[in-house]
Length: 103
Image (cartoon, rainbow, N blue to C red; front, top):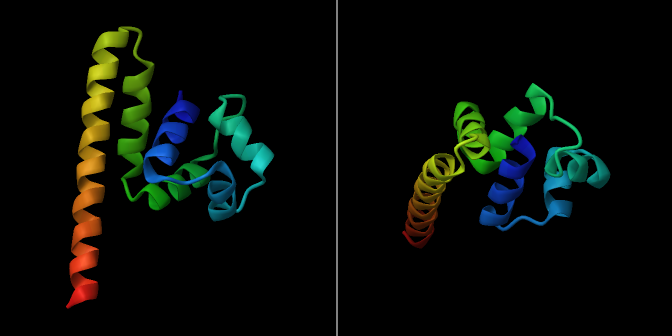
């Protein structure tokens, strides 16, 4: 579910739940309900998530769908590969940013 994906990405990016709710301009309790799959985020909120995580909205949804697949092994392999790709992209962007600062 999308909440599980958001929680995993939040942890990968090193945000606390409190930081995320502030960045998204929503209450901590509402954010908790989203992460725990008790509420579904609006499309506008999903757009904000994708901007914070610096990924396309379609990638966020695709990642969530792959985590949800009934065939857990296949879904987990695809999701794990996507997560590794996202982490690699984040590392590249961080290195490029560091290089620009030191110039």
